[in-house]
Amino acid sequence: MKAVLRSAAAAAFVALLAGCAATPSKVDPLEPMNRALYQVHDTLDTAFVKPVAEGYTAVVPKFMRTAFANVFNNIDDLFSAVNGLLQGKPDKAGNDFGRVMINTVFGLGGLIDIASDAGIERGNEDFGQTFAVWGLPQGPYLFIPLFGPTTVRDGTGVLVRIALGPVGYIPDVPLRNSIYGVGYVDLRSQVLESGSIVETAAIDRYLFIRNAYLQRRRYLIYDGKPPPEPEDDQ
Image 1 (spheres, rainbow, N blue to C red):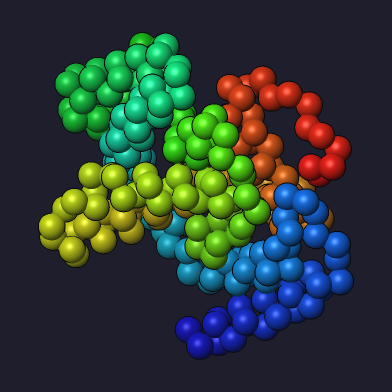
Image 2 (cartoon, rainbow, N blue to C red; image 1 turned 90 degrees about the vertical axis):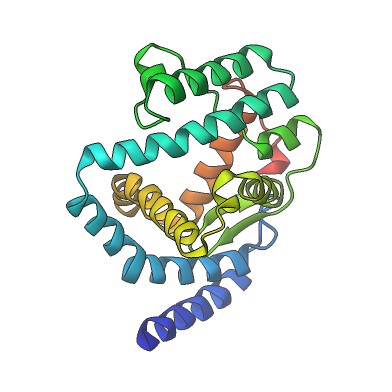
């Protein structure tokens, strides 16, 4: 454990020195710090999180992993419906509310995703997108170890989502933390293959992840039809 932490600290220090020599972009004014934090994340993920996720995938049957993910997706669909209303998108909100009702009632509390089989698409709306629609600025890009890429606006949206989520109201602390832990490992297991793609395709993995994240968020905010980006925002 101490050796891993020392390696993470050393990698962060090297990344910080390298980042200070670069000119941060407008969207990433904290790039030297973010690169250092990315190195900490990469070290911890490689040593602990990824092996646990791989073990989870190997030991837990796929139908159980799918059912667990479906339950969390069902909760996310409810928040997506709320955010659809907050953004003035009644059609999306209606679809998401419909998904929640169908999957909760006929899908054994959300364990089975019947709505997707019926062709009802997920809205994928969240508080970060709502804040964007309301005109709140994106703020600097951030990379948070063991959490990943975000921005001030999106990170704030995630905190609101966690604060309002039903898991946080479970009085049994060990049970609540266990659900959070399994949910985290499950999410990590879902991106094992994409992690391999990043490792083989990107020369600068930090830059690849940052650009991919910001482009995806822009795509979601504009419902798949983003306007051209100003050149000075690159």
